[in-house]
Length: 426
Ligand code: SAJ
Image (cartoon, rainbow, N blue to C red; front, top):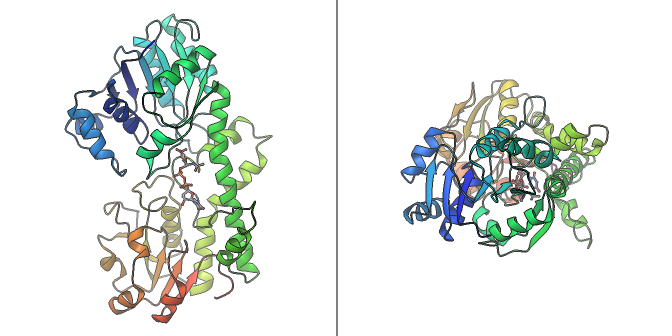
């Protein structure tokens, strides 16, 4: 079976690059999104997300005539569901987008079609939730049509390269389904394509991000311990990582993004009696903005009424994505502690946080500031010359939460420089 026409549901960070890459590899792709403004924009070549190289890729795909954007799915050989699975207030997976996408596919599903779920989902979603919805079409998964779960594993900022080069896991409801998935992704995937069952593939995806979350939680807890024991955590991590089997990650203001800060909750929700370490790691990372706020107050004294310039809002360096960003959380805590916070992120100069001031430039943010706090290690911030900055602003207290700056240079330029987790030099 060869799959010539595809329908990709959800044109976000995963669906749009996936649809465009298939299109530039010769497949006829219908890209579907329920958001009319995204559909309108894409039809005119306007890309609503920032990812290096994405705009060029999407425009090439549309120009080639192989990528067509629609609001509803149509009949196709294969369907890829790449809609978001956010979580609700109470940290439970919100599967409503997956469910409505599956319902839309069921309307047009035909014999021998292939359906692939890519959205990160709690274990057993493919078998217990998606299959029964698709089977309302009267067709049976694994018999009349192929059904697989294949997680995306790409790193925001490097999506286009990793989409092609990373190992791809394909879990089928049966072996034929997994093989059908392999045939499709083989169109452009250069990494290994490994077949398994659908639930294993779901669990692999959650385990990867949970593993990273737990390791970052350990780094954050080490930073707190270092602060107490007057140790510089950055020095300590560098030394510990000289052990051949140790690789401690970096502490920071917390863990954000739509993946790592969300996915572990799917385990906690599905098996709270078992996922105890996973739950604790989430709590440690989620409380890191509070640790940053408390740390600043210990270093700089009462911040009430003080003007603070907060540099960076994105969930990690050099992306424009603010979802679950610990930088945003930290700003809110500083504001609630009475500070007048001036926020600046070069990737999103329009974003507002209630009762804070959005700055359009670094210079605007630092004017008349008492304290400068670096929350995201964007390249643009890392390049700031402390001598140059000292001439532009009255600010003399600096908190670096990401080890983005050379403390010695900042001190030499006349700043009181504090670094998160550095209990030695403060
Ligand atoms: N972070 C730290 N310390 C570190 C590394 C990261 O505090 O040492 C923070 C970041 O600042 C950010 C968060 O963790 O707030 C997550 O960033 P990330 O770069 O680790 O990962 P994501 O969320 O951008 O992408 C992850 C990737 N998963 C893994 O590396 C295991 C990616 O491969 C997945 O495709 C993606 O999640 C996803 O969509 O699931």
